[in-house]
Structure formats: structure tokens, C-alpha cells
Amino acid sequence: MEVHFAPELQAKLDRVAAENRRGSDEYVQQLVESYLDYDAWFRQKVGASLEKLDGGESIPHEDVAMRLEKMFQP
Image (cartoon, rainbow, N blue to C red; front, side, top):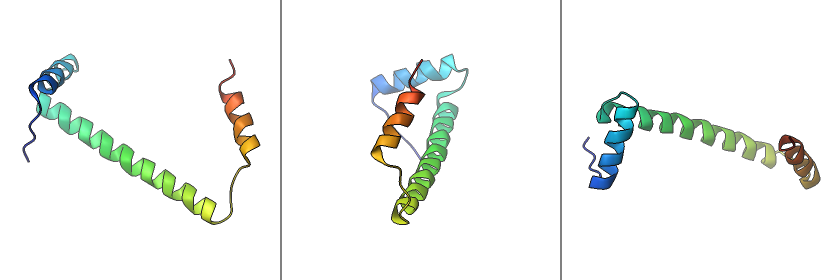
């Protein structure tokens, strides 16, 4: 497979790959693999959550708000 980038994006990719001590090709492969792994994880989590909702499991809005407040308190 061949992928072509706009010159500005290619320059940015080359710079970031060099900063990470990787060749551009190797860095792109690493990025794509990481993205695909994340995408599979995310889809699984969303699917599991939707199954819970379909099964009647949910958290009231007020409880969600309280949990978020606790998470972001210093």
C-alpha cells in the first residue's frame, strides 16, 4: 500500500518521526496500529454499554453528575 501526504503533513511527519527516533514509514505503521487497537477497544466498550442500556441498566442523570463532580474536585 502506498500513502501520499501533502508536503506540509509529510514534513510534520518526518519531524515527529525523527524526534521519536523512528523512520517515517515505521512511525506511520506504529501510529496506525495504535489507532486500530484503540478503535477496537472503543467499539467494544461502546457496544458493551449499549447492551447494558438495551438490557435496562442505566445510571440516573443526577448520579452521573455527582460522579463527575467528584472526579474533577481537587
